[in-house]
Length: 169
Image (tube, rainbow, N blue to C red):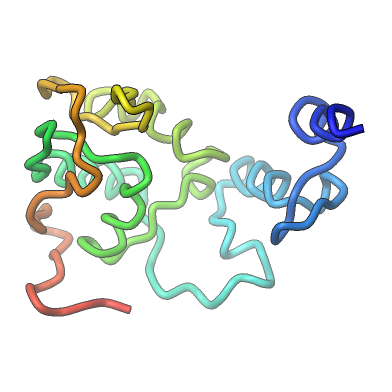
């Protein structure tokens, strides 16, 4: 029975999850993300249960500039790399922008980061530990990434970073 349920979720898209509960796929979070990606809207703007947006969603131009700045500022190790799990947090904290993969036409962050429009900026690599790393194109990498490979808060001129000691909530 467990194998059948697992296939219904992962292969056939008959079932999915919403807020930790199994639901028909059409009501699942994954279905909502796919629909939002096809329409180019952020999930938070399409889901009535989402809280009111606090930050503006990044455009493609902003996504490119901010991602390049994040990776360029990363002291590593490895230099020029951050863990994929930190990318959205760094966008929010440094640039006061929300990086929404669905608003940019993708249902998953890894698909967004592999988009041809970002090919000259970053690539995804797997560290020796199995952790996904977003690496600046042309940056030297090592197999010992730091989970806090974030570097100082530096950004492009048009998107000011948050001043030291100021915490945005």
